[in-house]
Image 1 (tube, rainbow, N blue to C red):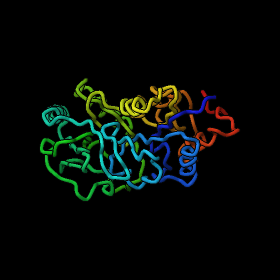
Image 2: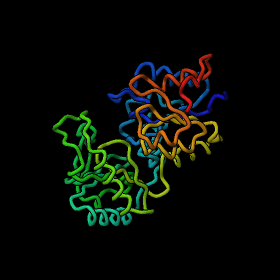
Image 3: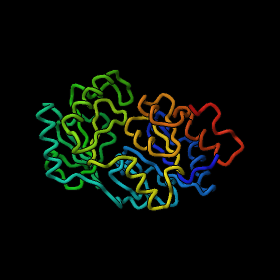
Image 4: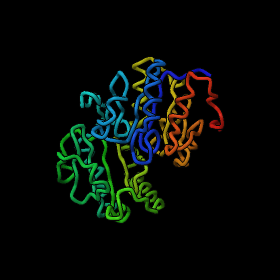
Length: 290
């Protein structure tokens, strides 16, 4: 087996444990890759600000792909160095069309500099809201919205039940996502990273795969030299693009259909288990290949 030149991994539900933390074992596995001269890049739905506590493991390049490909973030410098954002008139058009189709829908926008929220946006995780968030209609958001978030109260979970509660309602979520996608059509890309009742919308042509492919082209890395890890539908383009890809056990069925392999779950450091086989005598295919 030829070792990869690049590891591209999702964070929540994949590399991080169920509490959203990087375990000591996963940290060691990532740091070991650098000794083997294998690059690692985090490719996540998280906005830039939620990468800051991982600045010691992003690699010598210091960069992470955020917001489903909308931002390239220099974690150490706390600076977005590349962005793919909605034009204000396009954002207004999409919001207007979705309001007509889904009365009561609320929006938030992820920007390089923070977050803009409508008062009607049902926020599930208040601790993720930046202190410097701005408020008002999404049409009045500062320029530079890279990811548009959309929710309706009927689908969003009740935060009073506990931030970590897992609610049924996947069917409602998928119906909501399907309707959002039908309204938007080819004008933008709708994805789902696992949050109940949340549609994540980025400009057309933007995805984890497009951002990762650009990253690799700049470094002379071919898709066949990349191993990718993910667990949700927003990972599907990346899992399909990479030469070898691993869907996390317990992940979404679409991720499993797109990946070449399956790895153990994030509750048992499944990604780290795979990474530890690289450059070792361990058999990397021991039960993980389909």
